[in-house]
Image (cartoon, rainbow, N blue to C red; front, top):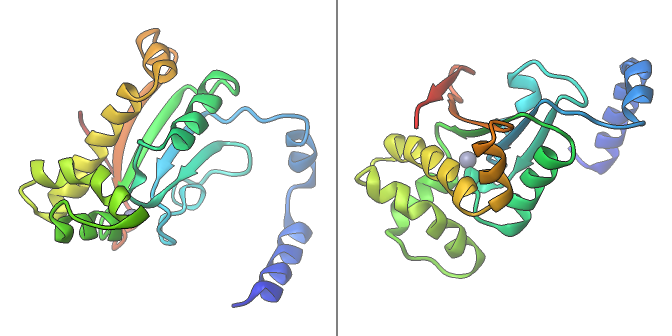
Length: 180
Ligand SMILES: [Zn+2]
């Protein structure tokens, strides 16, 4: 599929879209949930949670890591200025980033090396097992969001932002919660 076909897809979207809702949302957004998840093409929050335009404030980065200042700022913006009350850190089975972090043993060059380094503590806690590392990585990034952002930790302390973790199973489409 190339860009031309994407544009055709957009034409189809515009034809069938809820124009009233689009017009309403053009005046402002009030998403209820921030979803920090992986960039993986199989993990599409709006699809898997049955949500429409304007409902989810989605931040996607490989390995759903909450370390980059831009990622944290995006979460802060949605929580502080758009009034989102929930933050969901959503990992997924078969995550390429977590898998690579398991194989890299804490080593790696360039930008990818840096990203994998953000996942390494979860891999170590999981004893190098990929499935367990996906789960530990969700817990780790929930903690990183709190530790790396005064805004997020303050809102969480005041009860204005609840933080949840979950894993999406790419083989079944099901989401299961992850406890702290
Ligand atoms: Zn992934």
